[in-house]
Image (cartoon, rainbow, N blue to C red; front, side, top):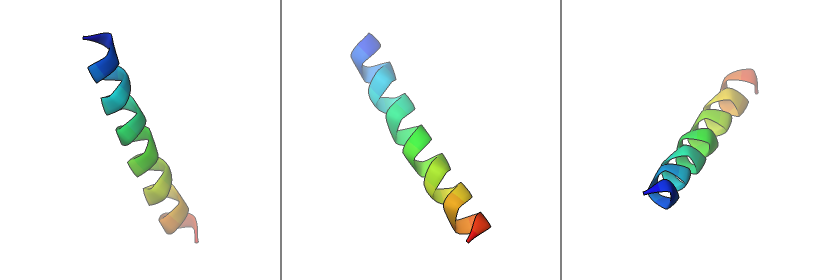
Length: 25
């Protein structure tokens, strides 16, 4: 389902941005 893919993408993006923020901080 597209909805499931969108949720997984949103979660991955959120984790990635959090990791990038922690690395740059």
